[in-house]
Amino acid sequence: MSIITIEQLAATKGPLLGIDPGTKTFGLAVSDTTRLIATPVETIRRKKFTPDATKIFALYDERECSAMIIGNPVNMDGSEGPRSQSVKDFCANLINLRDIPIFLWDERLSTAAVTRTLLEADTSRAKRAQAVDKLAATYILQGVLDRLRT
Figure 1 (spheres, rainbow, N blue to C red):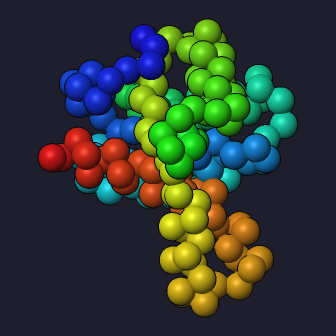
Figure 2: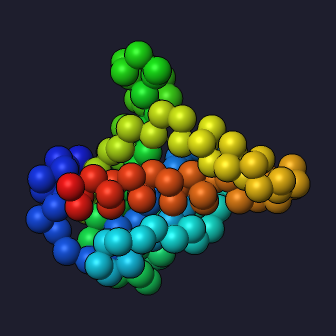
Figure 3: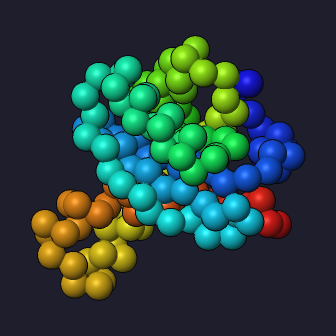
């Protein structure tokens, strides 16, 4: 496959794997088979591409996912900067390893929204640091699930 459209994503069936690609970690979340709810799974500390991709593909296979949803960090004005290009390069490298459908989702402010929620819940700094990436992946994935239902 390749980078797909929302229409192509809607035509696939099965759970989706959500990824919040940070500079130091990947937050991972997965949907249920009916695509109603996104659930946080784990945070992977980035090392090198091949071992990171191996972990991501292992989770993708274990959960029998049909596509990956990857957060695209576009700028606030909607333009794409270096971080967005880095994510697109990461997607291209994943597709080179394995031909799977990938959908990019605008993830502006996802980490900020999750952090604000954790602060409102009076979560300690240490617990926020542990949870923010996988919760951001959940936020991204849930946004796509909600969009697919409308």
